[in-house]
Image (cartoon, rainbow, N blue to C red; front, side, top):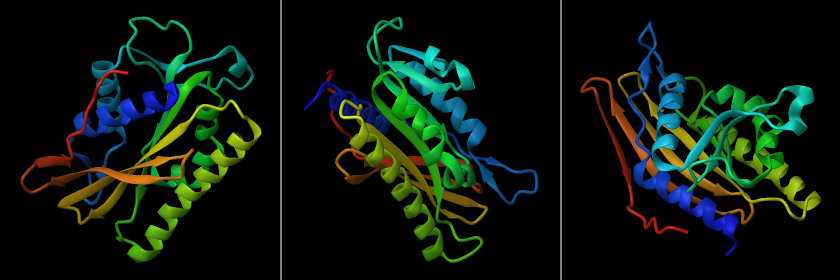
Length: 220
């Protein structure tokens, strides 16, 4: 296994063992459970805790023309940004933005960044407040399919391209009082998918719980 794939594997193991986001924030009308602000803050704190060095809103000389910035550049075991970054990361919690533009926008930053590997973290929704669950599942699956197509085209045209993985945080139910998410990992190189963990929150009891299988985190 290549070093790049080992780096991705280590990131996913640490995510599965230690990523426990806070309870979603209730909207003012009490009808929506919002995660964008709280989970982005938690994600940055989590990255700072578990990895050696992180630069947020990272800018590269090759991107100066359009002022593109990467959400996070991560070095796993280093105390300073020495050499090529280990992982380029982009995240988007807004399901509508993910569906409309992620595969044609932020994903390409991960693919083109000077990194050993790339990770996309996105939210999809299949909770059926409007429309059927089956229709929502179809849309969520189409999002992953579009990302796969973009990655496949990039890999075919760039033989030295670094591997990319997608962590899909899928909102599977939300009745206003409780909300459940399931996390899946999609390997863009191999085309495989596996479930990582789930997060359950009850607004009535104000409690949250994440469940996952414990996995080995041996150092690369």
